[in-house]
Length: 480
Image 1 (cartoon, rainbow, N blue to C red):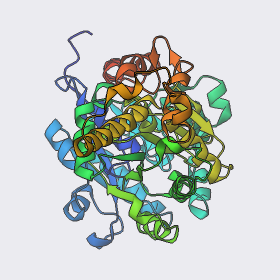
Image 2: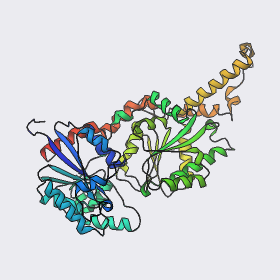
Image 3: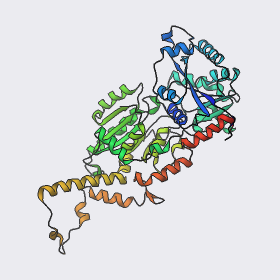
Image 4: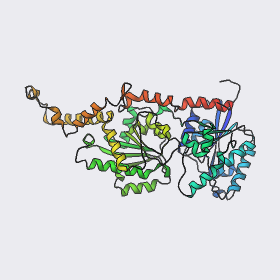
């Protein structure tokens, strides 16, 4: 890069700074930027009710705004936070007036305004452009809308973005997100640039020491842990996730035919990271499904990467997504992922991902999860270690076995003796692992496969360090 640009400030427009997908991705990008050259500021939204005004200033809103999850991170990185009144539909005139005043008061402070809140981007981006902002970008991060009136209103407000020229650039995290926000025509004309939701891949790489630490903290040292990461809202479809997990529990609890004998005796838990408006409702549903004591509602975690290590499997049945970073993070951690067919196919980067219809029965999803776990090398090794510990305990109680018992021609058929005990399933899993080998590693072995998986994700454009260099080039030059 040339060195004559000086520091450039970029304003990112968001609904808030909570632990959402867009927020996490932008903060990850921010942390990996050369901040001597590029600095980020944030324009967020909150209710104006506490100010007693219909169109309050940013300062007035910031005085009553509750600090959000990433506020401290922004300040530590050198960024600033501003605020607009939350758009509720009936305050269109007041919202527009607040936007005009904001950009008039902050003229010439930003080279780029990047709007990730596309529901009102057709309002604030044209105003930002008229105020003298050189580059205005609309960034689509969702491939759907909520149900009901809110969804209808969102589609209506996005309609102007289907026309070329509303902003200088259209970005989208996936093709589906681009079509959803900008329409088919702009997408087909090449007027939308796809920029994947990149993550810090190395931060999520499999780490056995971290895995043991988190599992011990959660009391899950001997458990099968199915994981999910996402806010508790309509799009994430937690009710289906809980129904799938309930079926996993029932299939294991009532496995009279010993289909899953290798997993017998192990506790099974559902570990969910995230918070949101539907969390209490999902707690009640878990109770009605009689699985509440097997569910862990962990909330938001600042060290979310560590919790992926503690999981054995990742289930993601979303109703719609732009491009879920959590599925990329799960792959980086080496987890097999069962993902809804409504999720953008761009997440299907590695051999770890399987996609299944959201219209399938929860029992079908549960069977797929159990089948994958049966062939998981790490799982087989964990169970084998448990069996070794049990045998060592019996040895301490009963004394060493006399090897002379087997020193004759009547050596027993161990395969026959193992039948129905669980060891036969382990042996099958070991045999089947050969089928699951890809370029010299086994999919079920997270440690062994880590380098290959991270390489595939980086090649596909999901490495935030590489993306930070690309975006810095764009912010400085105004083009790619």
